Length: 441
Image (cartoon, rainbow, N blue to C red):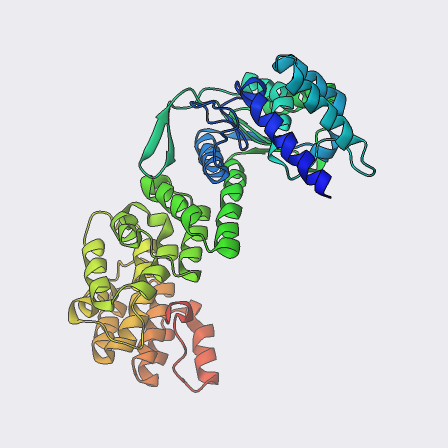
């Protein structure tokens, strides 16, 4: 056991000594266990956390510009690497001498240990050698990839300018992005051919080509798994904060999948990072109103939230009624808001042109907050609309607001489409139903 530890320390020291020769020219699109691209000091590897963050950032950048993608990896990678391939690659990359001879001797000794093959696992030295061996795979990925924008975000407030290509590799996990599925399939064939030349095999069970929205969804799963791992195992918020940074940087194009993921983790783990900024860019995220509304509701004081909502609802940004209706849900039925908020929903209810989703939640809230005002606004609208669905929504809200059963019958009998609703209420003896149950809290 002591000898094994000493051998491993020697193994690492030898690989560190040769590292600029072995992986000094490593592709920029390959991440993890590498020398810093601009500081190739012997044995000075880029920190793995930084590499993982850069890998996720690069995947997100690639996915933003791609309509097709290939993902693949290799079967039993470390244990499948032929030692003669490793020996050959070392001789090709590093000058022959005492260091390389000792490294060859150690690798041969590791390979002779019973039930152990290939490169030793869970070793930085092996990861360096593996990256060296996979350089032909990087060449294939580079050939089929295209240039990305020269400015790439690496982290909060930090950026670098250099030529990036639309591929990424984390050890044997490989991604290629482009615009044509056919090119992805052709690349898959060439990757398999190259892998075979190295004595390795593509993992067909984990190889897939994606197109359309699935490209971003699949690529972001890498990022999401990193966030969960950091939160659950290390109580580390940084990967989540990095995801929030990217969402806030481009609010108009922020995907619902990532927004929902990030907001849920913020709520579950009580992370308040840049939370106030979400209220600023919410107007640019109408597609995320149903995601942001619960977050705002449980975080901000009701008074300030009412002011924010009324400013939003009166602005040109509030052009999506679906979004406005979800933000009305931030104010619970059980607690009447201030007068300006009540007047806003009363105006919605009293307007026969109000869209159905907004009218439904506004009528339910008004019926709970101010019954007399609700009855008055509903009567005014019912006298000016013949829309069966809108009338049904308003009649049910009127019942909740204390309207008489005689008036309810009269209104529902005016359209044949509402006969079933009337029959249901008759069966329940006009007990006020829980109108808009999905909006109630």
